[in-house]
Amino acid sequence: MVSILGVEEFLELKRMGSESVAQSDFLEFGDTEASLMEIGSGNYGCSHYRRRCKIRAPCCNEIFDCRHCHNDAKNGLETNPLDRHDIPRHEVTKVICSLCDTEQDVKQNCINCGVCMGKYYCSKCKFFDDDVSKNQYHCDECGICRTGGKENFFHCNKCGCCYSMLMKDAHRCVERAMHHNCPVCFEFLFDTMRDITVLPCGHTIHLECLKEMEQHYRYSCPVCSKSICDMTRLWKKLDQEIAATPMPQTYQNKMVWILCNDCGANSHVQFHIVAHKCLRCNSYNTRQTRGGPAASCSSEVGIEIK
View 1 (cartoon, helix red, strand yellow):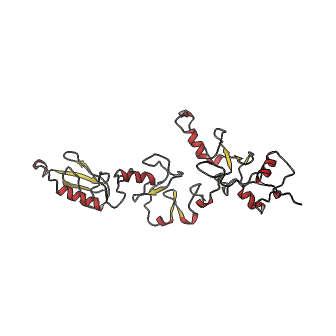
View 2 (cartoon, one colour):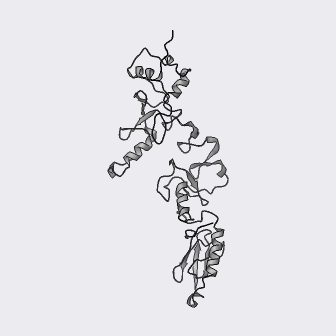
View 3 (cartoon, one colour):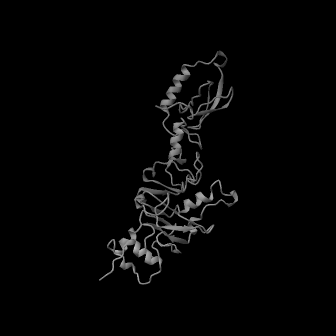
C-alpha cells in the first residue's frame, strides 16, 4: 500500500534530509507536479510579492524577501548615506526556499523539497511571483518584467518603455521619457510599482501624484509647463474676470511681451494684473518676458475646473 504524506509531513522529512522520501510520495493534492505548484502558494512573501523564496543580495550578502525589501532597508534614513545602495537585480545568484530553508542557485523549483517557488518565474530577471493574475511578461527591450499582458503593450524605442497599445499611434515621444524621477515625488519611474500616466506633452508622472496636483488646482506639466488637460472652461472664466477688472488709467495703455507655455508663441499684449492671453492659441498659460510690472498666469492658477 502506498504511503500518502500530508504537506507538513512531507516538508518536515525533507528538512531532516530523509533520502527515502520522494516527491511521488506526496499525493495530497493529486498530481505531483500540480501539488508542488500549489504547496504554500499565497502564504509566503512580503508586502511587494507573494513568493515562496527569499533572495541573497550579491551586494551585501544579506537575505531579503525581494529586491524592494532590500532597497527599502538599505536606503532608509537610519542607514549611513555612504552605505546606501540598490540591489543589482540581475546579479542575484542564490535563493532560499521559504518552505525548507534550502539555499540554492536560482531556479523555479526547490532542489530539496521540489516546491515551485513562484508560479511566474523569469530566469533573466531572477524574479518570482505567485500572483499570476498580474499577467506578468518579460520585455527584452526594457530588460525587466512588467505586468498587464504582453499583448496589451508595445515597446517604444524612443521613449524607452512599454506603453499601452491604445497609445501606439497617439502618444508624443520624449527621449527616454521613463528613465527619470517622477517630477513630484522624485521616485525613479522606470521600474516603479505604482501606476504611471503619460501627459499630453509626453512627460511621465505617477498617476496618484497627478491626482494630488489636480486637488491643488495645478494643471500644467511640472517639467515643461504645458497644460495637462482641456483648459477651455478656465480660459472663459478668466475672460470674464478680466472684463470685470478694469485696469487703472496708468496701466490702460501699458503693453508687455509674453511667452505661451502651450504653443510657444511670443505675443505683445496689453498688460493686466489678472492674466495675459496668448494671441495665437487663446491660452492663458503664459508668462511675461519683457516690459512693465511682472504679472503672469499659467495653468497652475488656483481656480477649480468644473
